[in-house]
Length: 152
Picture (cartoon, rainbow, N blue to C red):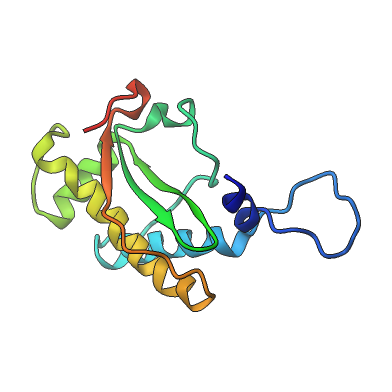
């Protein structure tokens, strides 16, 4: 936990006490940019929008039918990167990329969420490693119905 706060909330060098925490937006922006890149170039989705990045909680997962997850680990950071998909969004991505016209998220198509996150992680990792993070190779996972706290 300490490492995540050092990366996301870097220490202020001004000496002034600020009532609001400063978030390392460049670190977060790397993941946002990588997500947009993969969705636009690999998934062929041109109009990519995102909600405000936030710390994960089960309340925020209520709109997620599936989540792609990857555990991030380097000498300066440990944490988890999660992208949640609504059912409609995920099924549309499957339709575009895999040319599968599915009506439900099932075990045989759910692992694609992990693969999307893995591609995003690879894209972000390349940029972050240039700044000294040296992230390890990690296998992605996925979780169906995260609001129900069950995982596969």
